Every structure is written in C-alpha cells, then in structure tokens.
Image 1: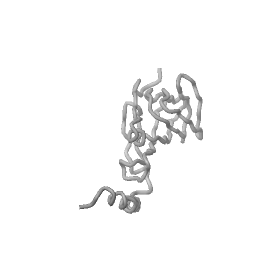
Image 2: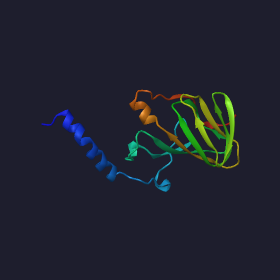
Image 3: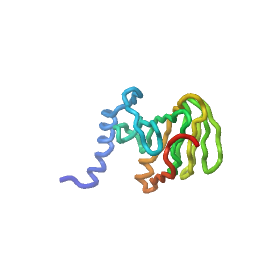
Image 4: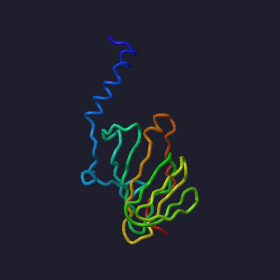
Length: 151
C-alpha cells in the first residue's frame, strides 16, 4: 500500500506518460457540427474531454448562418477570432463591428451576443478556459437568449 506522498512523487511521471499518448492535432473534417441553444453550428475542437492535454482550456469552432445571431449569454473570459464573414457583437450593451481577420476579447462575466450581417456564414474560433474555471469553482454559464434569426 502506498501513501499519498508516494502518489504525489509519481504524479509527474504519470502526467508525462499521459501527455505522450494524447492527441496533438484536431482535424476539422473529422469533427461533426452540433446544434446548441448558443450556436446553430458548433464543434468542440480541443479540450481535456477529447483527450488533449490542456490545463483547462478549450477551443471551439462556430458558425453563424446568414441573417442569424448566437444566443445571448454570460460566462468567463473568451477570445474569438473571425475566420470568415462580417457582423457585430454586443458586449455589455456596447456594439463592436468585425470582419474576417478580426479578434475579439470578451471580458470575464460580460454579457455578449454575436450577429451575422453579411451574405455568407460567419465562421469563428473561440478560446475559453471553462473547465479550469469549473475546477477553481468559478465556472458558470447563464443562457439569456437562444440563437436564431435576426429580428
């Protein structure tokens, strides 16, 4: 029988072995789109849940159909990079216009929502640390409105 301290001493080697066995590449074509209340099309690309050795971060890819918006919600900090399309985001009531190549920083617990105003689907990459926030007891998502067509 080992003690807790022996387990602690062995942790580093165990973590390195897990790291060597984990995936290092997410292939977009192999990951199916899903619908959520937040996004009409979204896929989880990188996360601990998928076997990637992150320290609590996630990477998602989302798509906003022409004439649609994401849900309005609140959660921890997020960075979004626009791959295609144009539109705007409302962040704590303030409007920010964006286009292909723009990057947004959503502050911790800011109410936000994204709108496609162009004539092609908007695609974006989102980086968050929700699993880390949950681990340190700060994780919380509030869904205020669902995704759907623009009014």
